[in-house]
Amino acid sequence: MFSATVSAPTNIACVKYWGKKSVALNTPINSSVSVTLDQNDLKAVTTVCVSKSFKKDRLWLNGTEEDVTKSKRFMACISGVKRLATTKVSTEGEVLVDKSEWKHFGVHVSSMNTFPTAAGLASSAAGYAALVAGLAEVFGAKETYPGELSTIARQGSGSACRSLYGGFVAWRMGKDHDTGEDSLAQQVCDENHWPELRALILVVSDEKKDTSSTEGMSTSVNTSKLLGYRASTVVDERMRSIEKAYTERDFETFGKITMQDSNQFHATCLDTYPPIFYMNDVSKSVIKIVHAYNRWKGKVAAAYTFDAGPNAVIYHLEDVADELLALMLQYFPDDKFLGSLFGSSFVNNPQAWDRA
Ligand code: DP6
Image 1 (spheres, helix red, strand yellow):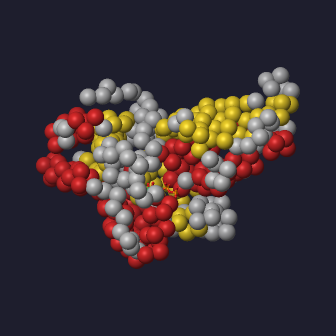
Image 2 (cartoon, rainbow, N blue to C red; image 1 turned 180 degrees about the vertical axis):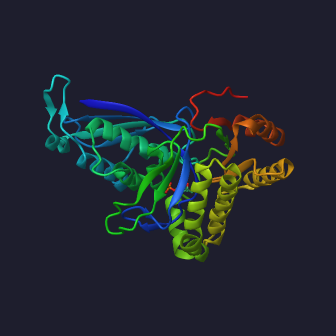
Image 3 (cartoon, helix red, strand yellow; image 1 turned 90 degrees about the vertical axis):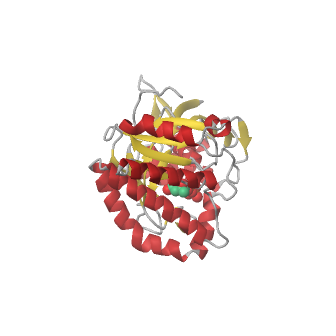
């Protein structure tokens, strides 16, 4: 038996992925870009064990076994990484497993999330990224081109491809619609590029969302004209501008595009028929407070974004972190909100933060 334990952080998109070009390949209708959060905070910790004596592939998620026998996504990750497996050799040079033998090995996976599963905090992103990273470790997988492992993670969950890299990471939608080989993640800036950047995460609700991303996207693609317009006309220009802004550490532009794109994503959800509501009234008050705060500061000092759920992620720079946290605590002082305040996740900063 061989095993490996890895962890992968979640990522929060600034230009959102919403809509599939190919459901089978899990390729998107538009490119997207996200910030990978710090390993100390929101992450999946995954142990992968492989053995010839394992008769079938199995998964335990937060301690409970899930039936994965029919999960195309899970199986695509296992077979994808097995294809890149190499011969395992001991430190003394003895062949332990020839690469042709790996296909006879069963895979057991145990994964834990350090944050609410399926509540719009990209749990599948961290989960599938950790799965692919763990499999790659155990099978000694070698990419035949840069980003190949991210094409496998993408088949688990689209946003997972971006969690394989730290820093600011783009998912290029790709042009090869037959294979999806070029629909992959690419690091735009590494994790040391902007150490002052922070993400404050407000867990408005830790309940499982009622419309999954996959299901919501499919209805949006079929019914929302705004989504088609967004993919054909808006996203490419936003990608160029936000990548430049991040590279130049221009928070105002980065923040403005992040908020505009979150708003447009939720507008496409409203334009979907029947409409999908991911944000709730607390989410909307967070938006109002952030705009009031920015007006008071006379600049974009904080930028909210919401994925497929009501929880807010507020990007900001280190110098306003205390002020912003104090402001949020003043508006949401009740126990429920306080108790679910996740804390300030230090983007790319190894230092832990003491919770309030
Ligand atoms: C709103 O990656 O969860 O968070 O590919 O169907 O698994 P699947 O979808 P998923 O969708 C994430 C959507 C989003 C935006 C984003 O992360 O870019």
